Length: 192
Length: 192
DNA sequence: TAATATACGGAGGCATCCTCCGTTTATCAA
DNA sequence: TTGATAAACGGAGGATGCCTCCGTATATTA
Image 1 (tube, rainbow over the protein chains, first blue to last red):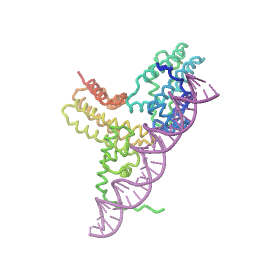
Image 2 (image 1 turned 30 degrees about the horizontal axis):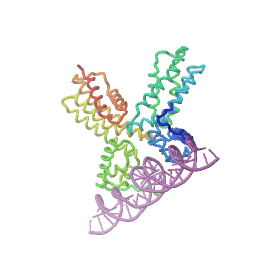
Image 3 (image 1 turned 45 degrees about the vertical axis):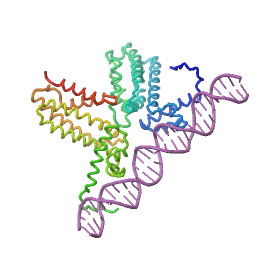
Image 4 (image 1 turned 180 degrees about the vertical axis):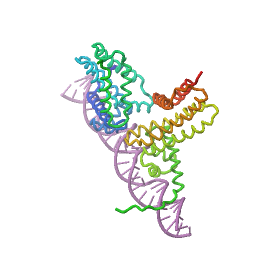
């Protein structure tokens, strides 16, 4: 959502917008691969901008995490709406859950960062929680309505279970395992 | 290849032992206050030794975490034995549980560190688990034997619950909350 | 007390963090 | 178009942290 502040200001410069997007993409890649403490200068290099530009757009490491996280949440929300058109509701649900694995990397980093810096924007938390629950409900209800899966699992429990699955995996190279667990779990939801 | 000669080694130097202890104390303080990524040079400064000395005693950040953690576990084990002499078993149990809050800071850091470096010494994990369970059992059994608390809570469940309480607290300044929760929980164990 | 094994400190090379500011450029009014 | 200027850009630079290396200091042993 774009916000317009009272000042009749100039149009934002196109290079500024472009660089912001490049930085966001680069940060998503770098953080997923290298973890929380990846170098911000590496992010700037990957984005092909100067370090000063990075700091202008995201004054703190935490601000960058927040932006990455919010972006991922939005992507997942959009993906759910897209998958809701699918013919196979259970498959749609499974695809969405597995897409989450990508997010978790970012989320892990962000939680750390927020704890550290101690201004964990609860607005962001609330926003993302709503968005995630909404996405799950959208996909789950369709599968339930078709009679494909059991009807006694509320979206909230599903989300909590997911987080549990992701966090219980401690080691590196956890993603394949997590994907497998999601697979098992969704099969468990199915009615025989 | 030359063969290593087995020689009767000298006694360890007293300054070496002293510095090792100073480093351990300093690291405990610094990590508790500043978290995982606190500066190792700060630890050395606080201990009043050179940075080289720190690295000689603890070649990696992880080695230092391990040593701090093991030390804390030992202290808690000893504390349990001491509290076991107390006249009020439930109070002893509560005191011990609250003493744990200190440990958690170190533990959080260590888990991170171990995950990152991916050689999480499982010997250390096993050791600390045994020691913790032993401590809880020691205190719990006495309270049960006196009929002060319910008898259907095994030590393992108590430990898991504790960890859950500590980890569910996300924000900074979590310690007061955690202490309060422990208080509530122990009261819940009491028979009316 | 002398010999020597052992530990000590910190300089130095490299990486990252973050700020500051001179330079470049997109926007807008004329 | 063009010139003025607000806005964004890049990266040098100072501070700090990581870790290694090695000359110096000292505890232990004979």
